[in-house]
Length: 102
Image 1 (cartoon, rainbow, N blue to C red):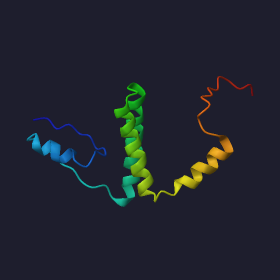
Image 2 (image 1 turned 30 degrees about the vertical axis):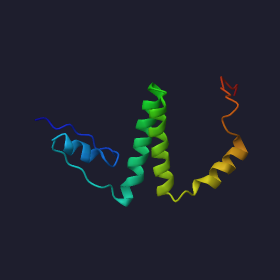
Image 3 (image 1 turned 120 degrees about the vertical axis):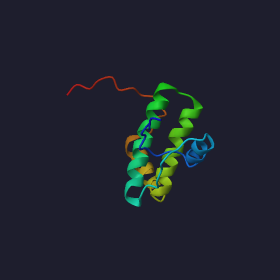
Image 4 (image 1 turned 135 degrees about the horizontal axis):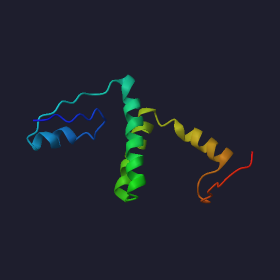
């Protein structure tokens, strides 16, 4: 049997699903130090998948990772988001910047 290495954060029930399929695996819990880094990598992975497939399911994956990051950081980002939106605006106007002459 060939081992396929992932070394990535997975959803909580994935080990159970693998076990039910009768496969061997090794998993471990991320430390407090590494959890945020693994979440950041997962966010990029899920964002790339959403970029390829603009489905609600892929968007849900991105949103779930964002919620996990938010929860881990104590949901303190809301004030920062409001300040940034006040300063730079949001994305509701659908503005695409083509170029700027420097």
